[in-house]
Structure formats: structure tokens, C-alpha cells
Length: 366
Image (cartoon, rainbow, N blue to C red; front, side, top):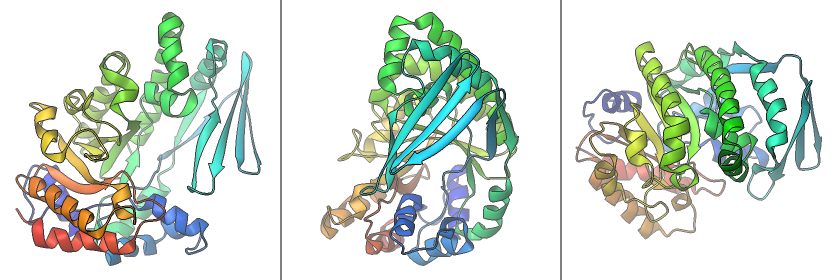
């Protein structure tokens, strides 16, 4: 079986010949481009898929929203100042501004100033969301589907759920926590506006010609917890996992932090799988605990190797021991896909990626 067939077997509830092995190399590739080791367009090229083949790892994930977004009746301005990236959104009821700082040492960026800072920003943020217009942008999906062949699966994003859009991008967990405690009525009204906007974007994304549609939550249980999940996340995830299934695609969320506090809830949503699952010693649940923690759900688990294990911070012996242990659990039943939790980091050792294929071939047979 080729790698695509292996993954599809598990996703359809059947046993392939070996545990499928798929890795997200996007972050590592981006670092190589920044270091001048790869051409700027490498990640979109067919060569990127061939790179996966040469390393012995299946392809499935590259951050991609299959829609564009424009804000009607808003003035949007973007500019840079060194490593700082700014965006200002002017609405008739207020101005929002955010700032993200790029960190050359980690080849990543993070927000230092969110769009939503206090309750005073709610009217402008609501106006922005109400006036968001979404249009299909499927060119990359078609291009990638033609490139990937038996090497893997094509995946695209829905928008994040409304809560995680605020937590992960537009407001931050501190502001969200304060608003839900002190301005619940205003926050709930805003939430409905964001949800309506996210539904419109999801309708567009649903038509993307891909195998998998992900809700890219970037979820960690200690950041959200059961009460916020039940109040603000479950309905959105249930609705769109059902819609994705009806369309004939597979659904998933990205849950790359702690698992224990939310795995039973997420596993009950109806998703095809939960992706980027991080086990102990980096996470808070060992691989052998995932099934019991998920309860009666048949949701598939995708992950198992912490990203840091692909660097020199972990010895060769510890790396092999960990992968062999994970495979000893995953080969018991076709409910698992071996993956990186959550990405291969910039200082990944190429030999480690190659080593996983060898270990899967030796120890990953059912």
C-alpha cells in the first residue's frame, strides 16, 4: 500500500499493512527558506512533495485557508517596522490595531498587541466581523491535489471556532477570560456575530477540493477547559464536523497542547480524528492512555512524537525508545496515525525524520 492508502484505510476504519506515518514539515521548511537553503516558492512546489518522499514521510498538512476575506466599509492598513508587523482596521464605530513581532531566532511571530484589548473594542470588532466577505480561493488546493499522488492527503482549513479565533489570534486568553467574567452579555452578543461570520467562511471552505477539512483550533486543554468548551465551542465543531462528513470529506481539529482536560469532550464531537496529539513526557497523557481518556468515542488519534524529539536535545537512544513504544501501542488496532506533535522544528535533524520510516517498517506492522 502507498502512504495515502494507508492513511485512508485507518480513516475508514480498516487496518493497513503498517501504522501510517505522516509529518508536518512546514515550519522546518520555512526555516530553511529563511536561512537561504531553499527557494522562496519551495513549499508550494512539486519538489516539496518529493522532499517528503525522499525523507520517507507522508504529506498532509500545510496551513491553508481556501478562501479570501475582505472587510466592506472598513479601512484596512498594513505596514512593517523592522520585525514588527502592524494592521489597522478603521470602522465607523472605532479603530482596531494589532502588532505582531517576528522572532528571527525561532522563525516565528507572536502578537504583542491584539485587535481586541478591552470591552471598548467590541463594537468595532463586531462591525468588522459583520462586514467580512469571503470568496473561494481553491487554486492551491487543486494544485496540491495534483502534486500529492500516493504520497499523502490534501488538507485545507475552515476558520477557527469563534472562541479560538479570539483566544489564539484577535484578543488573547486574558482578555477573553476578563470579558466572559465581567461583560458576559456583551461577549455573548459578540460571539453570535463572530459565529455567523465563521459560518459564512465555512460554507466557502466546505467546497474546497481536498480530502480533509481541519478546524485549526490550536487547542490546549488548560487554556479553555470544559465550561468554555461547552458554552462556546461544541456547537460549532459538531455542526461543521457533520457538514464535512456529509460532503464526503474527513474532519479534524488541531489539538497540540495538554489533552487530559478536554479529550473526552473533543472525542465526542464527531470528528474523524484529532491531530497533533502530544504525548508525555511533553504532554500530559501517555499514548496508551488516549483511548481510555476518550471514552466510548471512535475518533482516530493522530500524533505521538513531540517535535523536540527531532532535535539534538534528545539522544538517538531516547528517540528510538520513544518511537518504538508509541508504535507498540498504535499497532494494536487501526485507530492511530503516527505524526509529529505538532511540527518538525527549525533545528530538526534530517536523520531523525528518516529514522521514523525505518522504525515503522520494523516495528509498525499490525
